Length: 84
Image (tube, rainbow, N blue to C red; front, side):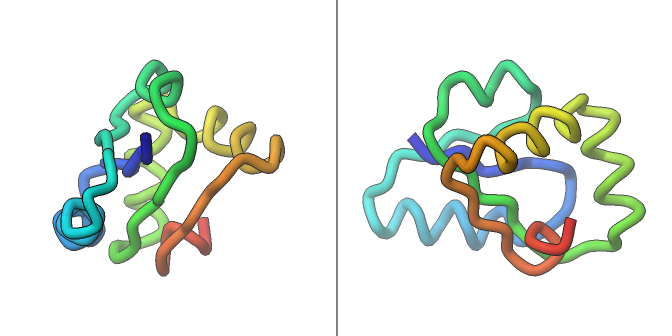
């Protein structure tokens, strides 16, 4: 299952529509607990860095995402999702 980070901004709908068109199973990730249900992550782009970082902190996703990446698990960051 592919997790799509829902941080309140970004091109979330476009990413979800693309995954749906490929018949890929996807789940919106809004909390650290949601990460337990996915094997890979897409972090959609668009938005300001500061606001995006703030939303990730509010959702307590910042540290788990850093761990995900340092553990070398499958991750695709799009635009600001890659920069963060």
